[in-house]
Image (cartoon, rainbow, N blue to C red; front, top):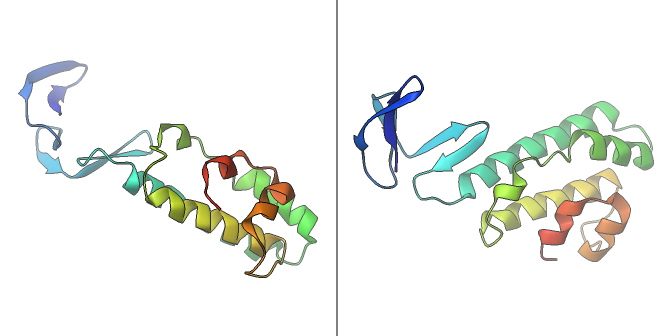
Length: 138
């Protein structure tokens, strides 16, 4: 449900439910507002996937520039630079895209600590002290 607007006042009637009219010119299926992706299907899937992609990019940057450092140092850099999940409180926890995010998180912890792919997911929270793990299924 979107209202056409100009400046601070809202003008015009409701356009339709689950479609966006931006600037009185364009109807789009999703829109980024304050770095949060609002979709016409009212699901958080696009926002979670975009945040996952940004997270993977941040982890790759940390591992690229600091890959030769000890794992303890890489873990501290990971916590400092890669775990800012500001919008995650808005996510629907029943969304299937959240599983992809959690998988990427676990893979990144394994890469930072140089663990094998068979390292169990229950051990990873002990290594990194990150709160996002509490919403992920192992």
